Each structure stands twice: as C-alpha cells, then as structure tokens.
Length: 415
Length: 151
Image (tube, each protein chain N blue to C red):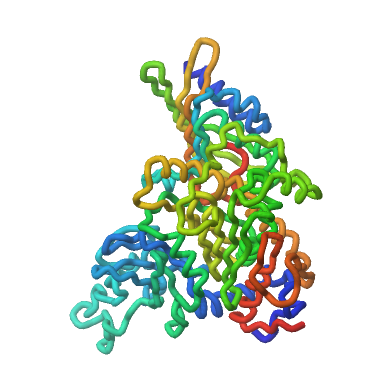
C-alpha cells in the first residue's frame, strides 16, 4: 500500500475513522497481523483432549484446523487442501485418524503430511500424477503452535518471538490465575456484531465505558470507577488487563460520583432474586473482575465467577463474530456449576453487562462510515505517554492498542 | 384443549410483539423457569444458556433490567408461531411449538432474527393456562447483534 494511514497525534489520542472502513486496510491486516507477526488465540487445550481430536477455528478470517496428534502434541494448519484450495475439514469439531479432502480425496496425516492421492498412477499408464510428483513434499501450511496454561495460540510467522515474550509477564501471570487448575468447557455463545473488529478491541480497553454504558455494573457494584483496580499493560501496550475488586468502594461515594449521569447508577434498582450476583472468591488473585485483552483476537474474562474466552472471528470490514467459550473447573461443586450457569446471564449476546457493547460498536461503525477523515478523541486518562492506570476513569489502554497496531501495520504515527 | 392452547400461545406471543411485558410475565407461574439456549450447546450436551431465569422473580428482574438498564438496538419484534405438537401425561401438558422472530427497525426494515422452538410445560385448567417451564431453543445460534427482548 502506497499511502500510509495517519493518526492525527503521535500519542494516539486521535485516530481517523476511515481506519474502521477501508477494504485496503482490512487486506493489510490479514497480511501484516494475522498471517504474520501476531500470536493468535486458537482454542483451549481442554477442547481437544483426546488424541485425534480436532476443531476448526479462525485467525482473523483465515480458517484454521487444530488437532491433537497421536503423541499428544497439538498442531494447527491453514484449513486448506494443498491440491485445489478446498476447505479440508468442514466440521466444527470431531475426532479422526487423518484428514481427507472431500473434493478429490487427498488424505493428510494428523501431522499435516500428504499421505495418499487416489488414482495416482492413472489407468494403464495414462492420467494420474506426473512422475516427478513427490508426495512427501506436500504438507499443509502449518502454524507454529504454543500452549500456555492450557490456552492454545498459533502464529503463521515461524520466526516469531516466543509466545511468552509476545504476551509479556503480566498476561502470562493472569492466564496462570484464570486457568489455575484443570478446566472443562461449559458451553459456547456466538454473536454477530455489525462493526469493525478494532472497535471491539477499543471497547475492551476502554475502562471508562464499563461503569457508564453498563448500568448494571454501576448499580450493583460489579465495576465502579472508585473501586480498587486499574489497567496494566505489557511493555508494548498491545495487551491490557482491566482489573476491579468488588466491595472496595462505598455507595455514598458512588452516588456522588454518578451525580452527573443519567440512569446509570440507580439506587432504587433492586433485584427480586439477586443470585446472579452471588460471588465466591476462587482464583489466586484479589480481583473479582478481569478483562485481559490480548492483541489481536482474544480476551480472557472473569466477571465474578463467570469465566470465558471471547475470540474475534472477522467477517470483513463491517462485521465480526464474537465466539464465547465458557468454562469452569473440573473439580467444581454442583453449587459452583449452577452459579456459573446463573452468572451466564451477565455475559454473552444476552448478558446484562455485555449486550450493550454490541450496540455501541455498531453505533460507532454506522455513524463513522460517512466521516472517514474525522477522528476520535481518546483523551480520558490523559495525553502523552502511555502508562498503566490507577483507576477506571481511563481509556489510555486504547492508545496502547493503536500504538502497537500502527507498529505492526507499518503505519506512520506522526501527522 | 388444542384450541385453547393455540389461543394461549398466540396471545402470549402477541404480548411480546406489543412489548407488553406485564401481560407476557403474567402467564408464568411463580416457580416457572424460562431459559433461552442455543441449539449448539444442546447438541453438545452443554447446559449453558443465553439467558435463564429459575423463577418468576428472575423473569421480573430481566424485564426490569430491559426497561431500566439495558441499551440495545431499537426495534419491534414480530413472532410467527408454527403448529404446536401437544402431549399430555397426567396433569402435565407438554407443547412443542416452532417459531420465527423477525426484528423490524425504526425505518421499517425487517431482519430474520430467530428461528427456534418453544418447549413448554403448561398447566391447563378450566379457566386459565399458565407456564411452568419454557425452554426456547435458539436454532440459528449465531445471534445477530445481541439478545435483549425475550423470545
């Protein structure tokens, strides 16, 4: 691309809206981010426990096949037959000893090696594969895979930095907490959000909105800006951990804090059956709320006892799928299992503290389409240097996202 | 009985289309459960719902939240119910009703929002029908935008 996209300010406190609407940029994201320098979330190890277990997932909009080999190793490939480009594995999940393309029956081992081609020698020496065809040279396009605390990541760049270096010690530590003992998957949700995928990445790093857009958060004290918490980033500010500790504020303070807002903090709003708010401390950290956003395609969520991953699967410039994977721990009591089921009311497409994000993203996307050269004001929490934040009245981590995005996309930041 | 059940289902769905949630709620018994779950989770044997209420108070909370707290796409719903299958065992009446829900936006444009099924357990008496249990199976489980208004 000849023309570099330009942020208005070099501290990323303003970004032009065209960045959410350009097909050219979308193509470049596939090349520069998803196919190259990013480590991408693929799945949870618990989803493919048995040898031969496989699932199909996506990296950006690139279909990917992940499977566990007979020896237990997890490998991942672009889900594309090397013959004519057919989607190799069509099912969402399953278990098999090999992968056979439906189109012409090319068969691959779980290691991605082509093992057989029908009619290879043709009939009576006519037809079939050329004599110099070497089956052993044909392999599926492999990703480099790394597993950390049971979370499976992959990168198409074989020379990428090690996963732990990419994530940074803060994320690694949190993953250790969020997955501190063996887990089991409790369910999935799928949500189609009609906006650009980067708007959701902004939303995740926008601590300020959490206590304003989600009235439920504010009123019931799941997340208020005056609680102990804040934002922690890695050294490149690409990932962010938003943190809150429930119960570290008081209601008088909250009433004062919210006096200039409309319908956000409502003292008279009382639940008839508050069990969806029943929180039991269980993880090896004090926080009751963790939103750990890992560039580019995943967040790890703890909202009280509701634990899940949210993966972004791109559907073009104007749409993405949010793929929610809910989990609990293998040794959960029946009571805890039921608590997680009740707390599923808080998150997901119908979540009392998450449905609004889909709407907010769409509102920005629709509105900014016609004003590509106008730009945002990302100034809550201050301008200038991008630093960790001591409380929730901040959107500085959004600037962190953009600073790394511009770096990985090879865009200039200066106006 | 079939006529009564059909009339009940039809009126109950019309209440949702009219955003008359008080009438809609009135049909649930105090210990009724209301669950919306994706066909994907059901198929996998996983019970994680899109939303759930274990009793009428939790249904009231959902509606209170919808009215006072949640921000969602401005729309009206239009439910179309298919022919119900009714089976009876003792005083338990089980009804399986296919449904589609269209959402209509402020500019009058409709989107097919939900293809699903009501799996109901009803109490049918001389003068009233009430809901003991309603599971809504969301068959097109790639939920468009978000799920705010009950189905």
